[in-house]
Image 1 (cartoon, one colour):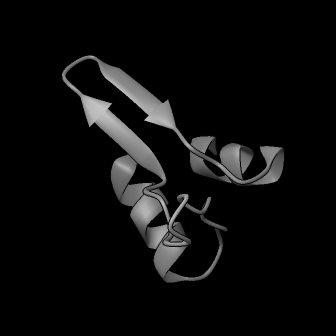
Image 2 (cartoon, rainbow, N blue to C red):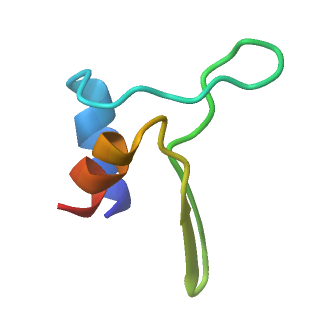
Length: 50
């Protein structure tokens, strides 16, 4: 799923959330058995999960 999200981001298929400093936030965080998706819209989340 992380590789798929990176591929979509590289193809401009996803819109990143902005950090308080205006920089793009990562699309997801993966830790051991826990994954959190940070999507700018429900459509972006659905694209990652597809």
